[in-house]
Image (tube, rainbow, N blue to C red; front, top):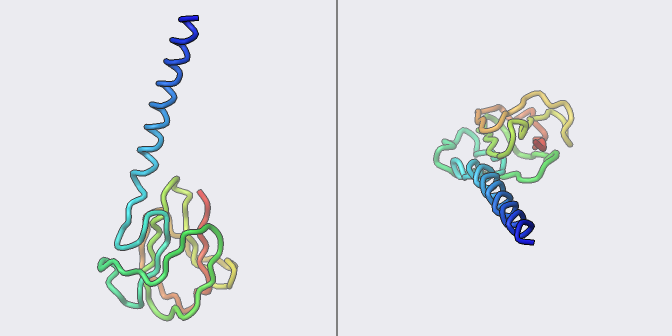
Length: 124
């Protein structure tokens, strides 16, 4: 009986250690960047300095998000976290159709959003 108890205790400690390591690494990259919350994709005002940290649009959920009123050059920041497959795409059609530009994890660039009608957040 003592062996079983010791074995169960050792297993519980090992499981807790693995869970703690996994949790620590998952939260290491979910920090805000330039006012964009961790786990989000953000768009900043036309020709604005994104380093001031005031995004105009913040998207959290995976899938397509239709845009409106985005004219001219805007910085788009992919501040999702997880694997490198947490991409965002800029699409010329509504509902995620005709996607032409992919932003990798932690990418931020200035894009002419005039022809862009939707943005897609892809699940890692």
